[in-house]
Every structure is written in structure tokens, then in C-alpha cells.
Image (tube, rainbow, N blue to C red):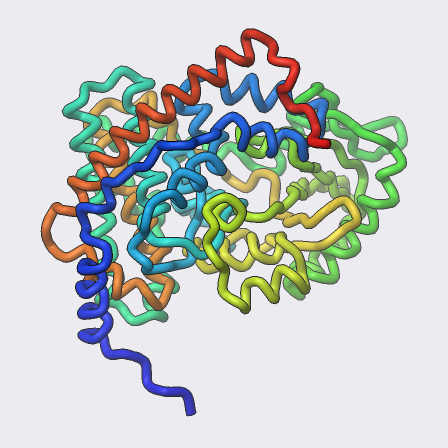
Length: 456
């Protein structure tokens, strides 16, 4: 028999004891000596599709927040410079404001949760929270909010994380597993500007279906087969010789998908595929959309996205658990993304799957299934404050799935010391990010010949 797990009291005590080796005030420490942010981005660009590197840089240069979205590797390297709490959990790795959103549950209700897990891995719990609250500061300043509004939003987010974790830990692990945020139920509890902001976002998300995507992005050819419409560089057909490879990938997906989904997709055949550019930081990695068509011309669109090593491991230097390393070695980085997504999300896309190919590791999901989000820049100050707290609550629910969650609660305690420390850290990192963005944009404007050049 395995030894008994530590009791709740013992775990809380262990969390409080961690304050002696890493005082909560130390969460504010930010070491900036010897940073090489642009070199990190260049190393990433050297491994991307060369034709798409200029688009990635253009998108990142658009604003400090856009740069922040694309610079998860830079932040991971910065976080690695300082000591951390030592309490590791399954982490999102990129928990900024824009990576929370709506999607359809398998039961067809609309849920709100974390929605991007490319960088998911094991990491100190505070790294995700720092990523979130710093995005509040950057997005708040980008949209012209007052320092008071921004600081209150950060403190509300940290409080929301602490209270959410406390609430989650009053549930059993099974109850925590099933807990989710139903968008319509949340809407019913709101009033005024917050209600309108959420209702508008829900309405848009409900319209973003596979059928809507098919109508917008495809046309039927003379042979009756669905074809994607080229819109370079965002959407374009690539080397036709890949057709055989994509067919093989689709077959591999069918073998690895859940048995009910593998059975379902037997109704469809692969009609077309195209390269699709998504996001900011992901631009230049391999991403394809696959149009599946049945005998009655129903269309299902899947997205196959390349999965690379998490920045938390590569640049954050966090040693990953042996079971995760073994899983990646056996089934690829796509298995890491899918596995951690299922852990961290309350419910996941049933079409979620992974595979390995000569071109790289991939994970697959539905391209659009009532996916949407809230543009924080459009919110009034009150809803912005509420949105910050809601995202932090969801992050706490995700972290509560890890066995170390009770230790986090013990470490946090009841005071606002952690909130104060993370506020100081996020304000300082906003300045670092702004300086990085200026340097990046100036180099881009100057047309540096080193930009995106492959190493060696």
C-alpha cells in the first residue's frame, strides 16, 4: 500500500512553512540584469516558417500588450532569474487576459475558462498569476485606465485567486473536477454595464460555429468538394505534395482520438486543408485547418496546431515530472498539451486529440465551436475590475486540480501581503515589457538584417 497522504492541516502547515524559505514579500523581487529579450525572440523566429516571421513581428509590434502576448518565452526566462515558492502545480504557462474565453461544452452549453495550453507544464503556482496580473497592468495602460483602476484590478484578481482557491478546497477533488463556469448562469447574476458586456460577448460567441466558419472560409468546387478560400498570409494553400501527409495525419488522429469521436469522424472524409495563421506568439509555427465533408455536404473544420516544448521548461528551466517527460517521449508534445488542457479546463473539446508526424508534434481540436472572448480594452472600469477577478477565479480552479493546491492556500494566508507583492512585481514588469516593446519596434522599423535569420 502507498503511504497515507498528508492531512489537510499538515498540507496547510507545509504551505505556511514555505514562507520561511521564500517570504511572501519576495514575490515582488524582479531581477533584470543580463536580460536578452530580443535574442530569445530571434531564437524562436529561427525555428518558425520563414515567410511568416514578418507577420509575427508585425503583430507583436502593434502594442505593448500584443508584444506581451508574443513574449511568453521572454517572461519565462525572466521568472527563472529569481527564486520561487517551490510549490509546483499543473500550469497554463500563458495565462494572460486574452487567453480566457468562451467555448461550447460537450453538452452544448457555453462555458468560460482558460483556452490556450500550448505552454502548459509544471511550474510554480505564482508564475501563472504573475502572467495574469501583469497582463491587467499592460492592458489597462494600453486602454488609458487610471493607475488607481489598474491597481485595484490587480488586487481584486489576487484576492479572487485566494478566495477561489479557498472555496475550491472546501470541495472534494471530484467536486472540484466537475466545477465549471456556465456563461448564461453568470449572466443572470450580473447587472448594468457588466451584464451588457458579457451578453454582447456571449451573443458573438454563439454565432461562431462550424457552419458559420464553413460559410465564411470555404466554397464548394465544381467537383462538389469543399475548398478553403485563400487569404494570404492568414489562410493559404501550401505545397500540394503535403496532401498525402495530411491524409496520413487525419488517419493518425482517428486512431488516437476518443473512441466515440473516432467513430463519429468515419462519416467524413478530408476534402481540403490549408495553412492558417493564428494568434500572436504562435505565428510561424505550423498550423493547418482541415475541412471534413460528409455525403450530405455537412462540413466539420478541425485545426491541427504544432506543439513545441513549453517555454516553462525551455526558458523557465523548470524540471518536469517524470510521468510527463515519459509521456512526451512516447507520444510527443501534443500529448502534453492535450493532457494538461484536460486537467486545467473544467470541460474540454471532445475532438481534442494529438499525433506525431515527420513535420512535428501536433494537437487537434475543432476550429470554431462557439469560441469567443471579451476584449478587455472595450470594458468600462467596473466590468474590467470584475473581469480581472473572474479570470483569477478560473485560474484558481485550474490550480486546485493539483495535489499541491492546499499548500498554496497555506502559503497565501489571509493577509494582502501576496497581493501587495504581486502588484509591485506587475507594475515593475510592465515597465520592462514596455522597454522591450520599444526596442523591438525600433529594431523592426530600422529593418535589422539579423531579424529572423536562422542560426548557423
